[in-house]
Amino acid sequence: FQSRGASYSKSPAPLRFDPGVKLHFTEGHVSKMVRLKFICQKTFQFQRMLNRHIKCHNETKRHLCSFCGKGFNDTFDLKRHVRTHTGVRPYKCDLCEKAFTQRCSLESHMKKIHGVTLKYAYKERRNKLYVCEECGHTAPTQDDLMVHLHNLHPASAFLKGKMAAARRATSTRLLKKAPTL
Image (cartoon, rainbow, N blue to C red; front, top):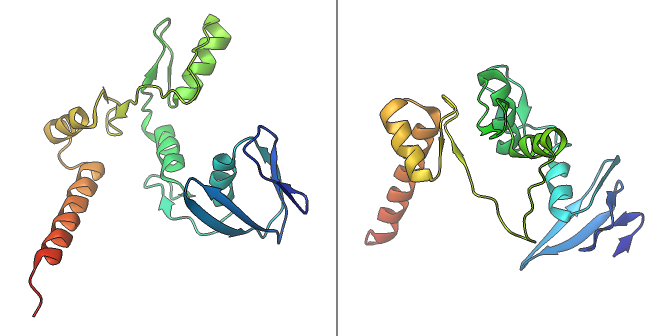
């Protein structure tokens, strides 16, 4: 639908947003209200990409790079940035020696350099690659990555975060089971 210059639809029409336009949109069964307070000339074909982009205009950055202090609003963007410091390039070309920090860069390389276009059916997901951010090792499952981390990087921040989350979940379950007086 159109609303004072901002267009939002499920069609492939580009999405734009203007300052002060209050938008209501639905994603599945979840409704959101968004007040946009800035002008940006970027356009987006999909609502989810617009939603992600809106975060970059937020001045408070929740995720900080431990190497240089640069802030990000999205863990994906932080992980991608950290790879510029660590040199981790988990996406390797099968046809030459090049390796990339992102899957989309590998796919672009395959198309431009080798003339290979990877085709995926509508909504078909590519196989997920689990990456050790400590050394660049790749694993086919999260369990395999966890075994690798336990064996080779027991002090990794990722492993510590997973263990802390498990402890929080366990204590929450115990509190729910505890009898009330």
